[in-house]
Image 1 (tube, rainbow, N blue to C red):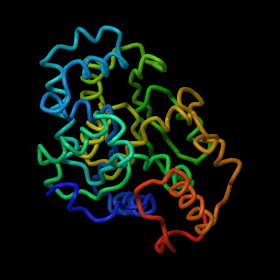
Image 2 (cartoon, helix red, strand yellow):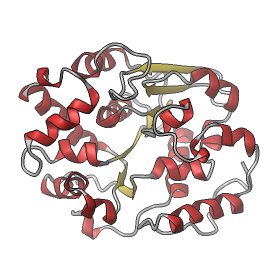
Image 3 (tube, helix red, strand yellow):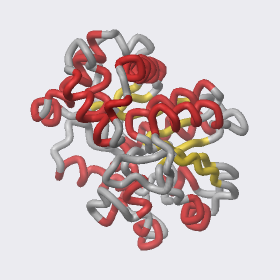
Image 4 (cartoon, one colour):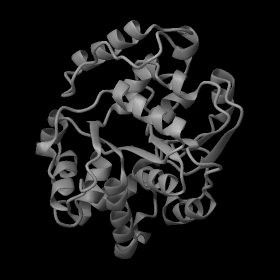
Length: 295
């Protein structure tokens, strides 16, 4: 099946319910989002050329020349597998697709290689920001006994305090060159191989939040294979750590302290306002039954 055959994209509230259902049932799940970086790799070599791949790799490591064709091929192959195995897939909007061939390559590669064979739910690539705008990470994380995080920056102490999480385990990876974070080991292939060996899911249905570029989509797949629930939140980790692409203040963790409680109706209004402001090609939220009255 191709992307054109899909119905309107699911809202952040739909995806939140899907995640919570998996956590309650302790069933594995992978929620990932695809952007221009993923488009560069997914489209190589049929759609995107080697020069674009080298440019992308250069954003993540100084010695990109050491990443030869074999390593690039492995990354492309595992990323395509991660897309196939995803249960929820966030995809770019039309405006992004027409602005840059690397964004457009997402849809082209997904269709060319038949990556939707398992019929995942389709949402928007800005899912992480939409969930943040509706403060949905509070009911998702509150009072959990365990949370795994995969990110260049350790925000575990803040998450523990803010959401009363009993234990947060940080799996550190090196970030992009402009904001590499706290880990010195090169992300690929050394950090990638370290992650494959060390990543542990403590019990079926354990929750992980992942922000690690295109590699993060693969980590979500590994977490799912090992029985966990993985949610790709990408650069939102930068905002939570107060570095990099922080952007609007609502992306900060501070908003959860500034708004200690929000009603369902307020969350829906905030969410729909975001959709309208950025003219996102995704349906607005409605009454949203099956959610708490407030969180």
